[in-house]
Length: 374
Image (cartoon, rainbow, N blue to C red; front, side, top):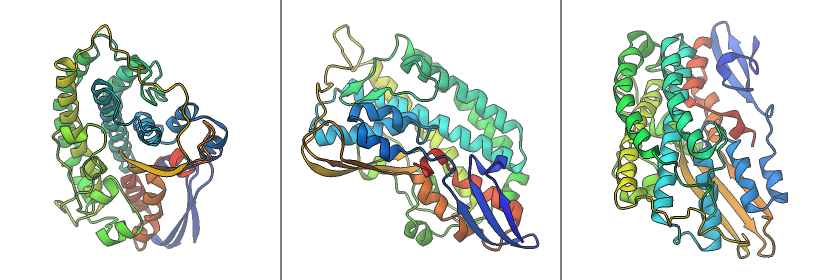
């Protein structure tokens, strides 16, 4: 039989249509059909200046808008030659808000993965805790999901007074909640039976398909651009890179990919604590600090081709710029969304599984369609 799963199916995580070729309950092949949510991001970029493009990056992976802003802005700053002039306080604020957004993104991945497999409570818990982060980022930027907070050369605005203290309270509140979540879901026998030894992604296949982020690290390699490229102030921060170990089944199975995200939440909390310590002590706010001080009057880079990449919650987000050197409008901006490559490996790891396992495998990849249909 040929079955359609989506684009209205609740567990396809957006407007994704999967064409399943089945033999009874067994899946012979899967063909992902995309293009239901075309954002036209790359076409928009050809008629907007570099600063005007930043709000459009928010709408790609809308679960991690801060990280999208950061990657794009780093590329423009490098092309303008001002990447070494950014004040330290600005850099630490950028990393702080990006790691908060990383936790929010992973909480969605963990909560919706639970509900895909039939666990309703973790979904409610994850959304409850994500709400704290959403409120803080809204307090900082004025927007709930699409922030436009990180600007070329600086920030839209400094952190509100009391933000660091509220952020510290959140970390203290949230740590015990992750322990509860692990007891409820991560070590749950039913959850392990549904995810261990299912959708095993061998490391060589992951590399050949260009997978990145937790999907790649779940297959057992410690490859994280925050360490590989050492961008922003990550070299000054101490954190580990979690990867799959085959603890409950085989290395690279659905449980490993899930566990990498759970462990990354803990590492993001460590990064946030270190950022807060610096922001409250040597990089303390002062009356003369202006987060817009280094904003260029005109963003006209020299004629060049340049590729920038950053470690987003879902993997490597890259932007390839072609600047003509004459105008503020780029000749071309090509975006490389991690979800696109991660989704392309789905048919490879889904042959021969049950139809119910397709839901478990797709959820473990954690895609967002705004990034697939750029």
